Amino acid sequence: MNHNLTSLPTPASNLTLQHVALGRGIQNYTCPSPQNSTSKPTSVGALATLFDVSCIASADEELLHHLPALVQGIPLETLDFLATMISLAGTGAGILGEHYFSGSGQPSFDLRFSGDDDWAMMKKVASANAPKSVDVPWLKLDGIDGVGIKEVYRVYTAGGVSPATCAGHEGEFEVDYAAEYWFYG
Image (cartoon, rainbow, N blue to C red; front, side, top):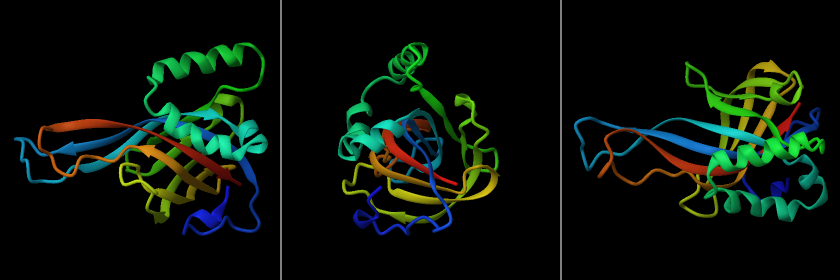
């Protein structure tokens, strides 16, 4: 990951890159009921499937950086199906894990889908605006609990930003997004 492109701090010197994932999912928001067109949506977490793209990251990082924008509009079910088919073909690629928010609101990652023991509950320690205002910010997350994962970077995001106001929205709603996730341990 080229840290010269962001204002995010670099990984701790004692950590090494463990995984690179392409996350495809939804950012969750809520608006008050009854509808108030002037209020702003509140972020209430995210849910994403994490696809293993470590081989792409090592072979062609520039190609990797284009993937979030390409997959953001593809239905998640289609990507899950393709990843399963690739896994069954024995290439070692496929679904690495999932990203979600815990009941206490902490960003969490479970990479045990691929046979690793890695999982983590994180806290946000740094944020940088994405190059496009329609894309969620780039983040650095530090581990507060877990196995194997100490730092996570969310970069090269596509989509996920809520509308400016709750006009037309009541209760919970979702916005599709995709991003690269770099895991250090």
